[in-house]
Length: 322
Image (cartoon, rainbow, N blue to C red):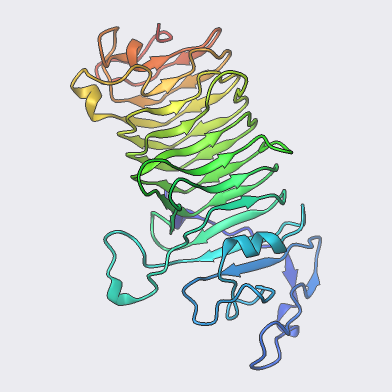
């Protein structure tokens, strides 16, 4: 999982040292320099920097922007633009005396396709992003967006970290990886009529719904959901009731209530109204069978689904949940 595994996909550049800024004067450097096969620009965001300012171009790490929203506004579609958000010290158990305690605290909309927003941090959790009350941290209304390296937290359980939305355009082809979704979030990732999502190496820790889709007519299709860890998501870890043709594999799902035979129905993987999904080799903290909190209760298969060798508490599944 961790954000410490992030590898920053910088645009291709060469001869950058020949395009320096004028000494002491921010925004005088060439933000592109001499490029090779790529026009992408790197934008720096650091709300803890003493000179962070949204009025500048944001292409120099020593003269960063203050907000992610400002950086999105400077991006261009399909140029390979990358937004790098610097680490902060705003974690719930971090030492405030070390400084840099200002977190990302925004509700932004991504309306530029083909960009990457990346938290740069040595922490396995990522760059701390506190979603404003009753808001969505990142709303994605366009295709081909990458989000990685962030630790999202809510306020009172009514917040959503990431929403891939069907608005004027489709929030398709979204990639979310190496992110942490923490307590007080109602929803980790909400996929609204979003196709071809790629969600992997994330942790969902006491989030209401981990990966979620509302229901009728908002189906999620062709998603790849793998190598994620879900811990005590009381409403549902992977809740895609209308999911079609999705691949769900190698996820770890643990729920304390399941151990007490009292888990809510479909709290682990819900594909009940979907079809043709492949669900394989997930580790599920439940027992086999049809009792409360057992495999047939906490999971729901869609029509023509294929569930293969999922690892249960006391067995390896040999059939779809009924």
